[in-house]
Length: 137
Image 1 (cartoon, one colour):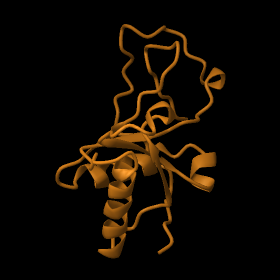
Image 2 (cartoon, helix red, strand yellow):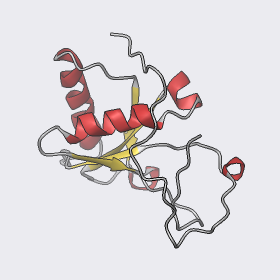
Image 3 (spheres, one colour):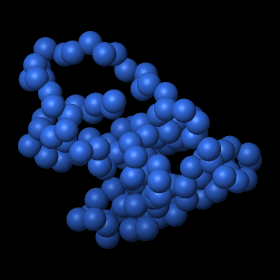
């Protein structure tokens, strides 16, 4: 089934600025790469089991008629790829990855978060910026 994202929807977040981030933010200095979700509560009996479990969940959702975009499911961290972890990382692939589509990824997050036993959250990336801002225009 071909996933059609439709027009870009504004993310369901407040546009009010928190006190702690810097007052001036230039989005051109931070490219929109690495938009990902972390899905936890998965099988952790082996190094690959969380990824396999999440792939089965996505396949089951698709078989039941849930329209989902193509997803890339990877280990939570390549440094810990051989560890027995209960989480995996989800990102968009193809043209949806090349152009920021937080609305589609939020749709995927809500869909996965509604599956019993697992939790899907926005992935916070490592880096010097501890305010962890996302901006979409």
